[in-house]
Image (tube, rainbow, N blue to C red; front, side, top):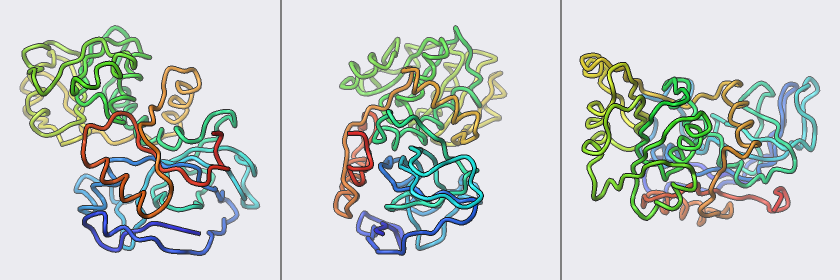
Length: 319
């Protein structure tokens, strides 16, 4: 089978295509033919710099390393003791060992979910990482409740678009910052107020919000404390907040990673099937070295709207 790996960190030129034996599942394992994978910010950061300081020890890779986190596919083989999946099942999941390969093997108890075979596998390939990160920010760490007001920085990106939809599904009022070119897209997701961060200062337009979710950078994070009401929460996915500063203001500040628990995965899939959560695929790329390099370059340019997805054998999808 074909894999794309890195043997060193740096530009897209460190990406290498290699041929490896097709993996053989153990007794409790599931062999999956991959249909699609999402292009995510951790792929870019890991390729350029290697493990980042906040990464949990169990997720720290060693070289050579295969990038990628979320995926969708079809079960091709199961081990003798597998009870949760059958050959032919459509699945999506999260693989900490990487996803840039034509086949993956996961333990049946890993972050793997069966999905109805009528769902298109291409957008599902880019659902889990962004949706589970959004869920963690909104629900696990943000404690969002119906009727509350939330400010989401960077609403047009993969995580931001999920966070907006989750917040609306929970009955919140949503304010988001983004470039003005994304206004129509963000309104379609349910945003109630959109602030153009290039021409407007959110600190002059927003006050006393229950929850701020930072998906952008340190400068935005630093300015966000002042707009949270006393007793509110500040959750950052990009940058570790200052808990002492937050405490002095009477708010709670938390750094959030994705929540890949079974409960969170079920909640995301339920919202998706109910039509309250959707993946906007902005562009697809074939699984070739040149195309994967281009996907990384396109992502790095910024201004991403929705998800960029790498698509494998078209016969394994529903399109």
